[in-house]
Amino acid sequence: MTARITIVGSLNMDLVIRSPHIPQPGETIIGSDFQTIPGGKGANQAVAAARLGGQVNMVGRVGEDTFADALLDNLKSSGVDTGFVRRDSNSPTGVALIVVDDAGENVIVVASGANMQVTETDVAAAEQAISSSDVLLLQLEVPLRVVTRAAQIARANGVSVILNPAPARKLPSELLQLVDVLVPNESETELLTGIEISSQAEYANAARLLLRTGVNSLVITLGRRGSLLASSSNDLESIAAFKIKPVDTTAAGDAFLGGLAVTIGEGGSLQEAVRMGNAAGALAAMRFGAQTSLPSRSEVLQLIDGEKPESIIGRDT
Image (tube, rainbow, N blue to C red; front, side):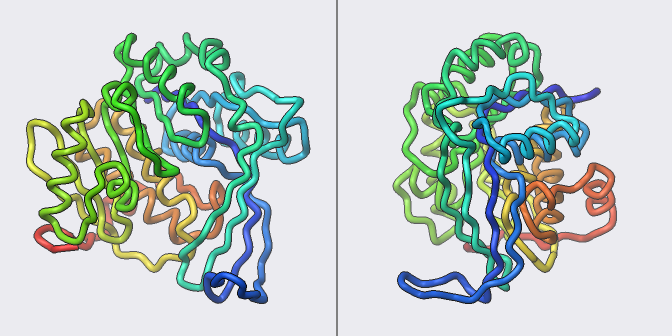
C-alpha cells in the first residue's frame, strides 16, 4: 500500500557554505562552495517521504519572492502536493544560514519568515487531507498552536502522529498526549527530560519519563550510533546504524523521519520503520545539501539489503 502522509511544517531556502571548521565567536574563516539549496525541516521531510514512495501533502507558508518559487517548484518536481502551501504577502520566505565543515558537521541559524505566520486556519483548510492520511508528520518550526491543532485533527480521525521536537523546546502535555511516535535526538531528549545523558541507563530513565507524558512510543536518534526505541510495553531497544563516511549531516535527520513515516504509513512495525530511517539518514549524510541529498527508495533498500551495520547494543554512550 502507498503511505498517505501530510506534513505541517517549514519551508526554507538554505544558504550553505563549506568551511574548514566551524568558526568560533569572533573568528573569520575563508570558506568555499556557496550554494542555495531548498530546505526547511517540513519541506525536507516531505521530499524525503515522497522519494521513498509516500503520497505527500505539504501544509505551510512561503513569501512572495523568488525563494518561494524555487521551493515550490522543487517540491512539485519531487511529487509533493503543494496545494496547502500559502503565499504570505507580508513575510519573506524562511531562510537558513548553514556552515558545513570538512567533517560533515554543521551549524544552522534560521530566519523563520513566513513559517511563523502559519495559522490554525491554514490547518483547517487541510483538515480533509490530514484526516484521510495514514500519518501526520510534525516539527517545531511553525507556531506551537498550529502543531497542536493539526495533531488534534489527526488523533480525532485515527491518524498516526509523529512529532520531531526540533528545534528543541519544552512541550506541553496537551501536545505530547496526542503523539504516537516522538522522535528527538540526544540534545532534544535532554532538554525535554532535564536528564543529562552519559550512559545507557540514563537513556532508559529519560525514555520512561517521556512515555509517562502520554507519548505512545519513543525513538531517540543518535546519528552514527543508530537509534533507540521505547514503548510502554517494551524495554529500551537499539537499532543499528550503517557504517558511512559523512559528507554533510544537513537533513540526515529529516531523511530518517521520511523513512520512518513512510514505513509506518505502509503498516510496517516501528523496528522496520527505524531501520528504513537509519538507512535513509545514512545515505543523506553521504551527500551535500538538504533536499539535494535525500535518497530514493531503491537506494535505501539496496543499502538495507547489502550492508552490515554497526551495532550499538550494550554500549554505553
